[in-house]
Picture (tube, rainbow, N blue to C red):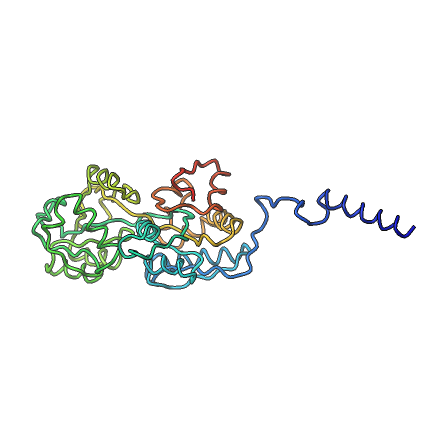
Length: 338
């Protein structure tokens, strides 16, 4: 009798496992609405406190925490530092420029010999405008007019300096300009006092205080970057550049809308984060109520939208993000799949 009873118990347990009432690999598959589980804290690398990255990252971390994902935002040296932090495991998420993310993933320029192969995209956020700024009273009207002129191209080794080189090579004047390595604030002041003829600045426009404040007393213009230059950049493989048109009221001194190009600030994560966590991070980011909160952080954050989430994405997406977009009916290009 004892053996028969044990046999009945074993049969009952087998039936329960098979029906999914007891775990053992045959249980219910987690649905899209299941809360992500992650035992650690997601550290989000941002930028300096005076820019857009830090307040945006801080608000996003706050929203993640409210939705059950532990996260914290920290200040950093911005894009290059942030990509390296993901590669080194110091950050699980970061905000950075899409061109820097491209260089990191492919081991180019400042990442030569140290590619960050575990960086994955989540979403493109907002444009960071490539601005070739001249004084409004300058006779420089086009990129070609910069030949023989003194141009501040950004700090040595910076993403700005790389962008200046790529664009001015496409315009055919890179080898003929007088190159000056200066940060944004230094370049703006040099332009104001006439020590340089043009300054290259990569930032959300209008750019305070680098440009906006000097334009009050010294009117400025932004040089146009026409379609043929943008097309040439794309043909050369620089897929991260997107079209942007600056309204004529962007700076004091502008008299017409000006076509230029931009890179995009993107949210990136480590490939090591679980798919369900990144799925939830993406879903939380684009929740309409959360977007409304993020849009209040800075004038540039109003550009964050599901409609442009893949514009200028320059690295493979995380599978968790891909799942979210496909559920929303957004076709993810094969080139963005790991």
